[in-house]
Length: 366
Image (cartoon, rainbow, N blue to C red):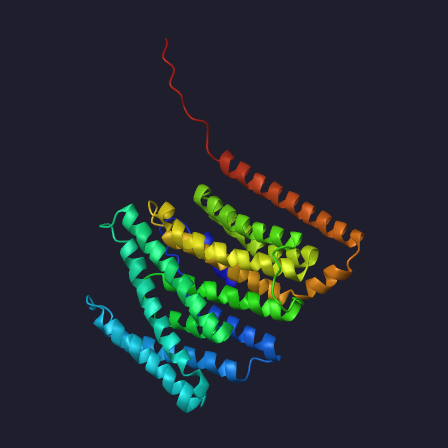
């Protein structure tokens, strides 16, 4: 699902509508269930019920808001909907799930609805031509700051389950793709935490002082920046989409095989953090072509990588027991695949270039 979305968004031609909200909610829910399964073996129990309840409240609120959202200049209706969402979550926690100790989570979820409405408004205002570049940059900075504040608040009070419940609020986003981008960040974090629960043996988390761990973190930031440069400078949609699909899948798998679990977790964290920062703040560089959503689509890469790392976790064990010959065989296979892809691309470019005839030049003379 994520792989197809990466290909669809980055293979889109100029003028095509690029969206994230059609996959953000499902990705966040699957990430939340993956987290619960990594903790207890199955996606059931109290935490799974909390996440499902949050998505149920968000879906109901989405149905309630539709008649009111088109005329809300004073934001009164959004404020009422935010309070209603928090009260709905409180009813779910106290009456349906009888989790009295989690009543404060209702306030976090209610604030999450307000967060999504705010991101929606910032995204819409940033695309308004009456704002100049400095004002748009201010909207992007405020959006990123809000995402960081709510990430810290939810995880500090309720752990990753709180962040999964917060991600459910994306269902109410309707006008821009900023809420979906935030939800994809939450999903990437949840997939990464599930991977760490299953494969990282260090109970205190990732130790950045280890050489491979810090190198993997550097790689994660480099990948995000490199991808943004690629999609900005290159207009070959299919080539870009294929490259990102390979990076999102093979990148995480190779990190697990060659560097093992803890560096892979560091790589995934760096992808998520660099992805949310770069995709939100650097939208201005894509504003001239009106491709802000293409920039936001970079956030798909951390989610895809984290999900693939979780699914291919067996490569961690295989890498631990692989001999030097096995590693060389893998490197040789990848080198051969790279050469084949480069040849195919070269032939395709040559064929497309050969169809155009030489330019006709008029020469004066007798």
